[in-house]
Amino acid sequence: MENDEKKYQNVINKLKGLKEVKAPANFETDLKRKINSEKFVQQEKKGFWKNILVPARLIPSLGLVAAAIVFFYVVDTNSGEMDNPFMIEPRVREDIVEVTDYAAVKQEYQKELTKQKSLKKNEPAIKHRTNENELKAHEEKKILGGEKSGEIEDRLDEKDFARDQGITEGKVTTSESTFTDVAKNPQPTAPADTDADMVTGQIITKEELNFRQVQLSPKEQKVVDDLKIQVQSLEKADKHQK
Amino acid sequence: MNKNLRELSDEELILEFQKNSVEAAFEILVQRYKNPLTNFVFRFLGDYAVCADVVQETMIKVYRYKDTYSSVAKFSTWVYTIAGNLARTEYRRQRRRNIFSISDFGEEHKVYDLPDENYRPDVITDSGIKDEIIQKALLKVKEAYREAVILRDVQGMSYEEISEILGVNEGTVKSRINRGRAQLQELLKHIYNE
Image 1: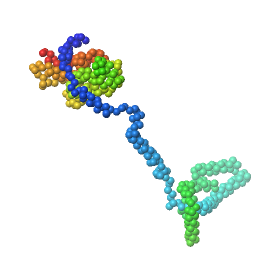
Image 2: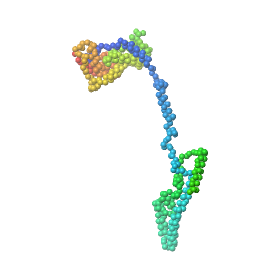
Image 3: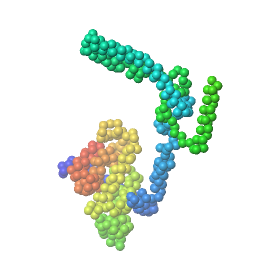
Image 4: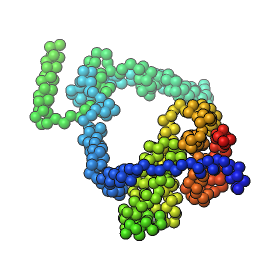
């Protein structure tokens, strides 16, 4: 350490020989003036809660809270007044389907069905009869000794097998196959001369249409009934004319 | 009363100001420290007007934050620490203002010995001019070294006191002083021959 001081003795001497710089003459008066001016500016330190609860500081936060309340309660984005595209009921296609008297439609439908059934029953019945004739002939043969009982049974089994296969392939022609016949011919079962509206009325049920359930007042209901009667009377009159 | 206060030590005076808010005690402290602090800050900054402001700011801080002073430390250490911090802040502010400083273009920490037009070896007879040259040389020494050198060689403080003021250990203080002295010797070699 002493060696270092000796080494830099010149520098140390020069630094020690520097004149002392003194403060300006008006140092103390300036200082007093600054201190006095700072006393007025200086505010006492406030606590954390005091700072927060000063009314002027509360204004922006209160404004924010008010805005939030307005947004969530006054401007309710989920209100029912707004149309949600996924919640809208489908429009009733009154231009396409207009069924007025369901009882009449049902009656017509039943009639047509019975007609069809009676028509289709004729053919299989004949076939069935031929089958029965064959069986009888075989039985007579058997009784007469022309054919063995095992052969008859085999033949009947083959027929049953063929009929079962026919059901699976849709080729059955027996009297029991009326249902499969309908499946085979996918044309509407209703007769061609029936009205188009009637046909649609037969196929589409009320539940399937997803009608809007309108609660009518008694007065409105009466008006609607009157209109229905008028329409029906007009239709009857048209039919009579035809 | 004032006579009695003048007999008190720095620490007793600040305690008097702390506990009894005796303004006279503070005034005596200002009288005692205004010149040493001005000398210290001026040697560090090299600008007298700025230095006066820094010392006044130091005294205002002593006045305002008198309660933060702890009687464990010496008052001189406390007041020099405040002055040193303020001087450093001011020095850095000044340096930021000089955007195109020559040292920014060179290697880090490299000191450039710029030719001084005012300096002529044949006229270095006046002590005032010598002081000016030394002051300019001091300002070229690195900030950390300069502060330590001024406190030791200009203000005449002990290593222990300097280490407390700068907040570093004594070993660091000594090495900083030596490095600062070495730099100064290099800068002032042309006037040793006289």
